[in-house]
Every structure is written in C-alpha cells, then in structure tokens.
Image (tube, rainbow, N blue to C red; front, top):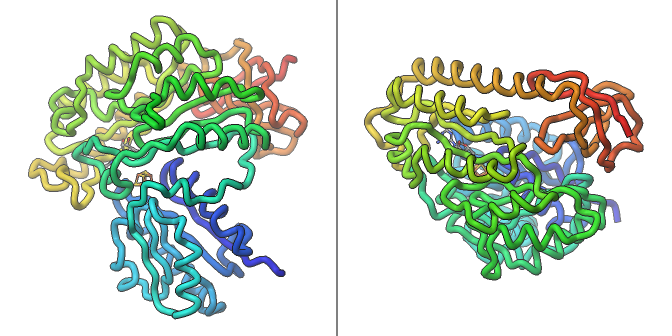
Length: 435
Ligand code: 5AD
Ligand code: SF4
C-alpha cells in the first residue's frame, strides 16, 4: 500500500511539540507517514497555540496558504488542532470552510474517527471534549525521538492566573499514572534517549498514582542509560520537599531550571493571582542553591500587565538582577479574551510596554552573555544532539541548557563528552572536545 503523506505544523510550547508527535502515532496505523511540506500532502494538521496575541490570525493566514495546496488536490484533509482549535471551535469552519476537522489538545486521539467521518459523509467534523483518558487511548507504540526526548506527564491547570488561557484551552489539571509514564521513559531510552524532559503546564503539581514529581524523578532516574532529567514548566507554588531533595542529591537532575515568576512586583503578582510573593521566589532559589551551589535559573516574565507602574517594572528588573538569570523569556502582556486580565481597565499603553520590554530584554541578554563568557576556560560535559549549521560541526547542550558547538564528526551524536569552552557568545558556547 502506498503511504499517505501527513504534514504537521506545530506552534507554541513543548506540550504542543509532544502532542504533534503523538498525532503522528495516532495516524500511523491508518497508513500516514510524515512529510516536511504541505505540497503533495494528503493531510495537513496545524497544531496551534493561543497563548499570546494574533495566534488565531496567524493560523487563518497559514490556512489561506494551505488552501492553495488543497485547490490542487481536492482530497486533502485539513485539520486545526491545539489551543486555537479549542478556543475558536466552530468559528473556524465559518471563517475557513475548507477546513475539514477541528480538535482540541485533549481530543486529538479521535483524529482517525473524525477523518473517517469526513471521508464517508463529507462536511465538517469536530471534537472538543476534555477527556481525562486521552493518554490511555493513544497508541503505546510511538516513533523514537532521538537523543533528547520529551514526555508529557501532566496537563492543564487549576491555578487561573488572570493573564492565562491555559485553564480554558487545556482544561483542569490532570496527571498521568506512574506505570504508563515509566514505560514510555523506558521506550525513549531504548530508542537512544540520553535525556528526558518531563512536561506539564504545571509540572510540579504532578500527582499521578499519588506520587509527587520528586518521587517520580527519583524513580525514573533509575533507568539505566538515562543520563539527564529535566522538567518543564514548574510553578513556584508547587515546589515541594521531595523535589528539593532531588535537586540536592540526584546527579541526573540537571542544575538548570526555568521557573516562571512573571513579575517582580508583589502588587502585580497579586493582580495576576499568582498566589506567591517575590520573597517566596527568592526563598525557592536560595533553598535550591544552598545545597546545589551551581544551580542556574531562567524564567518567564510578562511585561506591562494591567496596572504595572514604573515602580512595579523596576521591581521586576531588580528581581532579575538579584537572581542573576542566565536565560529568560519575556513577553509583552497580551489580553486574552475570556481571561480576567483582558477586562481590567488599567491596560498599559503599547509604547510603554514596548519600551519596558526592550529594557528588560537588554538586561537579561547582558546577564546571559556575562554568564556564557564566564564559562570560557571551564570543562563541561555536553550531550551532543545533531550536526550544526556549518559542515564539520556538531551541536549539543551543556548541563545548564547552553547550546555548545564543537568541531567534530557525527560519531559524537548521542554521546556526553567533556568540552573545554573557548568562546562565550550571546546565545551559545563554542569549545573543543577534550576526551
Ligand atoms: N500575555 C503575555 N504572555 C503570556 N504568557 C502567558 N499568558 C500570557 C499573556 N496573556 C507567558 C507567560 C507564560 C509563558 C508560557 O507565556 O510568561 O509563562
Ligand atoms: Fe500555547 Fe499554552 Fe496551548 Fe501550549 S498550552 S500551545 S503555550 S496556549
């Protein structure tokens, strides 16, 4: 049987990247294999993100481009999946009638049924149910992911930060059972993964099989051949004793963490409904560093949340300086329809947001560059992942998530080798393999 071609375009977070892999798994038994462009594809899935502005608009303009391919091949199935699918629902069929299928992040296991329905009956098919047993319905067999694998362990969120769409698009907090996670981890390692990143929107709220994240990490770190464990994205409120202990004592848990703080101002944190203060954040950082002195942090920041004054913004700058982040993701506040923040009447003017964002990014970039430069002369273990942009070079990651490029052959890929750092740049390190 000739295979049918499936093209998936992924937007947004790592959870979406994971979901796209699982969508491939779901369609594979029905004769679909992945391809790299929409031209000539039998099915196109846009796996979308709704976290910030213009997400939906971007999807509609991409759909316009895909439609031109469908005009050449009338049988092409077009599906919109992910968080825009969840948020827009039927509206997508109204604005883009050539879309065949809409699914949300919790219902893509039904893609084959929906595609079958469209092919049998023509017309549109949609499923936006929040199904807790999504993971149970996904095939156990899935494609190997390579040297560094991602594994979803938790989804959704019950925290309702006032800026965030996640509780609406991904639904209530849900944790997978430990045995299923463990089996998936073993498969990733058997297929060559040396590193696994455990994923969840609120990953340290994990409570599958009544275990916490600390206990899960301890268990998974016993898998032979697995060298590195990371988790993403935690919430300051859900740090717990077992997790601190893993940071202190488990050499497989990497000494780098992206721990979103969003703002350095207590007033804004409260308006954001974060349920933590800036001092709570400092305490977490200090507590981990107390016994893991080399621990480094990055964070997510929202600049220009409603009501943010110059002083509130300076508090965020100050927090960033005090922690000394070695990376950072900062975004202008973007009002999301349906969230409380969008209805607040003290929205910050666009020019102010732009100016603050620029200053903030300059600060974090400066900190990142200083840290990368401070690594020159050090020897660091690097997990090599793939060929770099230039021929004869291979790129990997340090324990602190820095991208590291060396001269070398493909035999390095999948290996952890010591590298002497010779260059520290804004976004990466250069070095020489020493072993
Ligand atoms: N506007 C801007 N940034 C946002 N984020 C989430 N919601 C919004 C919003 N409405 C950012 C947060 C979060 C990251 C994934 O996206 O910083 O941690
Ligand atoms: Fe985007 Fe959030 Fe959905 Fe991830 S969960 S795709 S970040 S809206």
